[in-house]
Length: 288
Image (cartoon, one colour):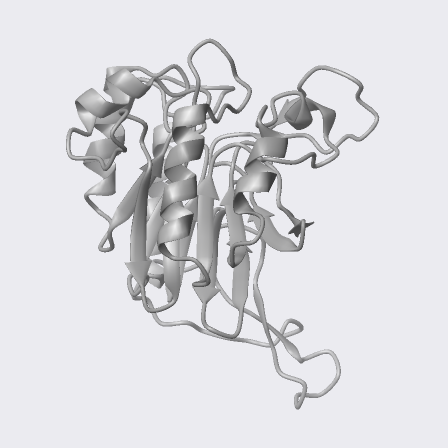
């Protein structure tokens, strides 16, 4: 199963910029790249901070652009989102009985669970008793089967102070809920950095956001330093044997070369010209 993960588009009103960047243009470029190279994916998950200020115009633009994706899409809420405004724009979105944007998807590989860690009034992650009870029930229903969790906030420190100041506040409770279940992977956003590892034996990954990033500086004791490093989306290949996640810097415009080790020294690197889609490629040795 191939899954696309996109995170933190931070859309504003169409035509407006955020940190000198156009979030909507970046989303459009991301969708175009996914359509061109991963139309066979079975699912796309956008893991929160869909809109930077929770504006209805931003959600309307998101709804319009997502129609261009050929696969089903699940949307999660982040700390910048407004749940009521989002649900007014996406009236058919799956939600739990309390109105939290939480749902499940069952398949041959197990259960995929999509969580809502948004809380009005704070940028930190929040997972209240009602949401905890919902998750306990969803995990109990598939006890022993593989589970994959998608969420916005990280439930454990990643050793970047700017991100860890806004961590999921109920980290201990969350750990207790998922312990003892066959959670194979946690996918989250929020930190705007490519990070991978494991937590209580559960592998996790996260990635860069679509509009801006958190600069990698472990010396900062407080404050958030943002950068305009290239955006990325993730391609996850999920099977019974493994979960493999690739991060793709889809706007990278650096020179590309085809390597042919059988060519003579100095001619083994063949530039790939940047040509319009559909044009023939004239490959020539780097010294030719």
